[in-house]
Length: 515
Image 1 (cartoon, one colour):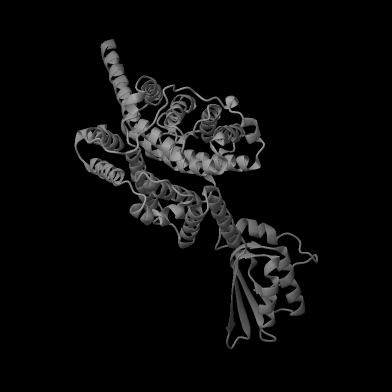
Image 2 (cartoon, rainbow, N blue to C red):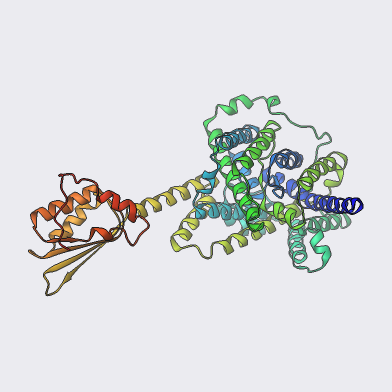
């Protein structure tokens, strides 16, 4: 019995270590690629990935959740560094970590689940497009432009004037290799991730054929730059623009982590439930430490988390081990990483961006038309301005739509021929703001006719509206017909509405109602 137990334990440990190696193969090139895409040295991506795996992963209660620098957040960091400079990176990430800790300890993480799905999907879709458009330029050994639309518009010119044909060939080849490998049904295709196969192949080709392309550059000394050693770090904390960027980053990384954790819950078929506040605390701790070393922001990454889960990981071992292996690889084999062409890394990010956009498109097929409109507006705003402004425009639009829905009142009036009666149907929220319109409808009625008011589809009934009907009834004795027992019966608010109409009227009595 003990022998069987030992064998089972060894088998489980073997699976966990295999998952750790697979996770390393997925994360290592992506961390370097995200760092380069963000415009920071490649080693920063490795150190940030280590913190995401070991610190955030160690504190997390979700064993399959893998955190680290993400391609979409890399695009956001590139925007921020273009605006503030690289010296602001540490303060922005550190502030974001502190805000996440405050939100987590105050148990307010649920608010990130209350954001309109259209805005969140629009944010992710915009991030995916930002990745594609900006990394396409880097794939050509060209420089990315200021915003998403600029990158999109300048692609033809980059292909004509600014293109390194060798880099373009290697980049396109990397995308085709990654795509082809992802479609293979062979067992080895499940072990080696498409990104790794494409990057290794591109590196070998570049070296054997002596191709003139840019490659990853690592310093001889992989030292950590501590925040307090930067000369202007205190000044950054006093800049309101830095705080705005930090708040934007907090929203983005927290929303992305929440989405990833929710996806892990869904993948478990309801068998696992996670504390979102605890997960936000672990993310905050990681971002605080990453900010201290002027590192990249950390978030729960769906691609790596899914790969970790699919490889059979049941514990935190793969997450922790792959983090340490990444650090060891950076310290012991830095020269090996310098064989990687930057155009191949950019091409893989383009490939990931396309897959990201495709997945989001599948998830929004069943959205109602108004939600799709909010999503499209968010995406356009993200591409035209920046991620913060785009998400803000999406949030304001979503709030405006809800306010309209909550305050909108649909009125239908119909004359009943031969009965000297008028039917008035109300649907939605009847508030004091609608009284002028309702009075116009009442004044348009034929003199002496009865008024049959239907309130079955009312979601809210303002006492100012009740007073208006009461005053009309006082002027037109025995002409008002309302069945108060059916008020709100066509909505989910019937009980609340009944309590409201049972309250004393403003003038102290209910109107006389003829059934």
